[in-house]
Each structure stands twice: as structure tokens, then as C-alpha cells.
Length: 328
Image (cartoon, rainbow, N blue to C red):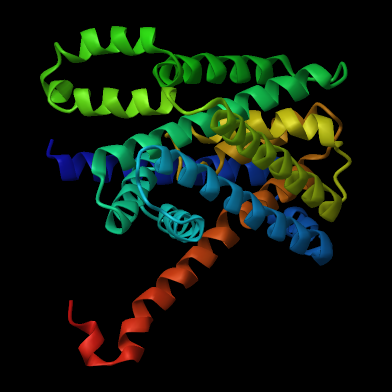
């Protein structure tokens, strides 16, 4: 099977899984009508506040990546990084490949600003790992703070995510794991040539001063707390009676499940996880599904469409400037 045929097969499977999951969820909720009624009844003021908070989250994420890139000597501005992140979300809505595709697009756009390829790639990967690690830690903290209705399967998801992220993230903070990985990498032809530059980039991260590490941790934790606030605002918009504390770990567990490469943009997986976890707290299926779809719309779809608008303006700007500007 050729690479192109394999990619087409994977995309077809993901689309099929997404469609089957959503069809099953809507069937369990009693059809489209009660779910759409719940979405239409949502209060616009809370939705608008949630969207503004989501943009602040995106700004914090962009600033964190800027700090990581700056440690590598890559000159990027927070505004540039935020625009690139939003555009990446737009392409991630319909391009196959999930997180890998998003990483490639983000890498391509960032290296057009500053052509330090290895340093930029190291910053992007470490940024994603740091975000995932904070997601897991925040989820575990809120799970511990919650009452007896907390979910044990969700705890297993959070622990598995934490263990996997810590294993991959360890070389960024300690030299010993990096040395072990160097021994393995030196025996692998595919990475033997580039590993010394990657190891050098990781060493730069380990040399970040304590003040810089605190800033990175603060940005990550602040972004996640504000992300929980977004979920809380959307719960108020739809009338779902879920408190801030349980939403802290439900959000983390659902986002980790959505990272599994089985559907398009995590659709179906995220919604299924939320419906299952909400049902344990007495939330009816139609209300839980309406809420989860609204979460997707505000935090992913609307933000991605904003990125599409930015991309459209970028493409149209040379045409407005005249033929002389269009020549590259």
C-alpha cells in the first residue's frame, strides 16, 4: 500500500468513526431535536463571555510558546505566534492527521518568521508537552478536591496521561533521561544525525532560570484555570448544573480522550466522554450532548474560523496592494 493510499484509508476510518460516534450519541439523546433545542436555548451573554475568555487563553498559550522559542534564540512576537496558532486551528478543522498535521503547519509558519528549524521544532514540541502535563496535573488536583461523585475511570485516564507525558517531558528538565535517550538515539539511523541538535535544544530548556520556569508554569496553569472558567460559563449558558471543581477534572479527562487519533478533531470522543461523565452527576443525555457540542463550537470551531478569517485577510492583502506587491 502506497503512502497516499494509507493516508486516505486513515482519513476514511477517522471520518467513519466520527460519524458513527456522533450518530450513536444523538440516538442515545433521543435524536437531533432535543439537542438542538438545548443549543438554541443557550444564553448568548455567557457564550460571548466564554468566547472572549477562550481568546485570552489563546493569548496565554501564544506567549508561553514565545517564551520557549525565545529561550532557543528564536525571535517571535506573541501576536505573530497567536495568529499562527489560530490559523493552525483553522486548518486542523478539516485536514487529516490530527495533532501531527497541526504541528507541521505550526512549524512551517513559525519557521517562515525565523528560520531556526531545530530550535523552533524543539519549542513547539516542548510547548505541547508542557500544556499536556499541566492539563493532567490540573485535572488530578481538581479530581482530588472534588466530592464522592468523582469518576475512577477518569482518574485512570488522568494518571495514564500524566505518566506518558512525564516520560516524554523528563529530558526537558533533567540531564539523566536525556543521556539515556542519547544512547538509544545513537543506534537509530533515522535520528542519529539530528539528535545532537535536539539534545542541545533540550539542554537550553534545562538552563532556563528559575524565574523563567515559574513564568512558564504560571502561564500554563493560568491558561488551564481560565479554560475551566470557559467550560463553567458554557454550563451556565446551557443550564447544566455542574460546578467549577468537577469541571476542572472532567475537562482534562475529556481533552485527553479527544487526543486519541481515532476521529476528526476529537469529535465524538470528546462528546462521548462528557456525556458519560455528566451522566454520573445526574445531567440528562440531551443536555450533556448540547453542552459538549457548544464547547466544541466555542473553543475549537469559532476560534478556528477566526483563524480562517486571519488567513483570508493575509491572502487578500497582496491583491489589494497591487501587482507589484504580489510578486515574490
